[in-house]
Every structure is written in structure tokens, then in C-alpha cells.
Length: 147
Image (cartoon, rainbow, N blue to C red):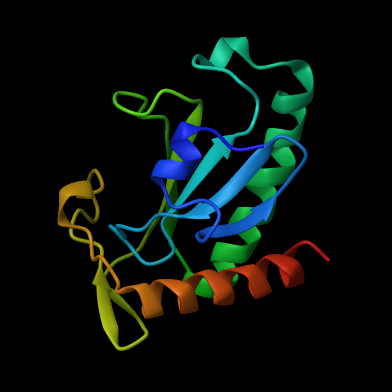
């Protein structure tokens, strides 16, 4: 099951993984390499509306994506931001943070906000081919991280 927020962030083409209640999507605009959207698949527009199962499954989703991103990006910090100002469904923007630059697909991904708040407005937007490569890479790493 998908929702409007998932579709806005490219579902199903940006889908890395799904748990029972959550979808892990590559964020098409990358403020840092490996930026994700963690979207709840339950019909809820407020965090407090989630059922107990979704809250329990959030732990599984977060643990998996953090292991995956540790391996992929070697982040120094990670931000889980619930910025539900425009997109209505419960979701988090997951931004791995690091000093300097990471490189993927011939592109540089600086963390423009380091060490302060993420510079969401200064994101790198990979072309469709590079985005597809990023999704494929993270899918493979998710499988390895959650095995």
C-alpha cells in the first residue's frame, strides 16, 4: 500500500525496502549522500495516530537503515527529521551527516550544513540513471544489513 507522500518521493522507483509498516525511499533531492524518506504505510497524518504495531516496526526500519547507511556513507551523525509541513502522511527525512564530501556516480555530495542544521535547500539532484544506481546500491546494502 502506498500513499501520496510516498508517491511524491518517487515510489515505487525510489523504494529501497519495506517493513511491515514502513517504506524506505531514496530522497530524489540529496542534501547529503544517502538521504532517505522513511514513510509510514499506515493511513495516518499525525504521529500519535499510528498503531502500536507501526511504532514497534519503526525500530526495525530505523535499525536497518542506520546499518545500511553506516556501511554506505560512513556518516558521523544522522538526523531523523519529521518535517510534515507539506506532505500529509507520517514520514521522516533521514539525513546522514558528515564533514566534507562523499562521491557517488561521478557526483560530489557535500554536507553544506555541517556541523549545524542540514542545508535541505542545497541538495544535489542526480539524473534518473544515477538515482536508479543509488536505489539499486542501497537495496543491495539493505539486504546485507538486515540479513
